[in-house]
Image (cartoon, rainbow, N blue to C red; front, side, top):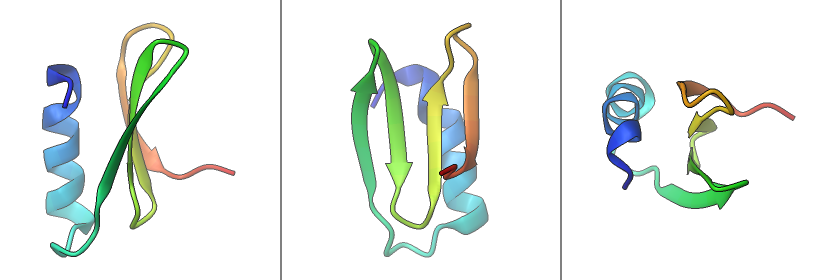
Length: 57
């Protein structure tokens, strides 16, 4: 897991995690995107800022 995302992922897990959800790590345009199957994503935006948000359609 990229170090930049670890704190945000931990915060999402504290907020919505129930221990049964799973993360998937992918890369989009060279930046990491971690998706929690409970409906959240944590990513680096184009400016390099960490973003944690519910999935957006």
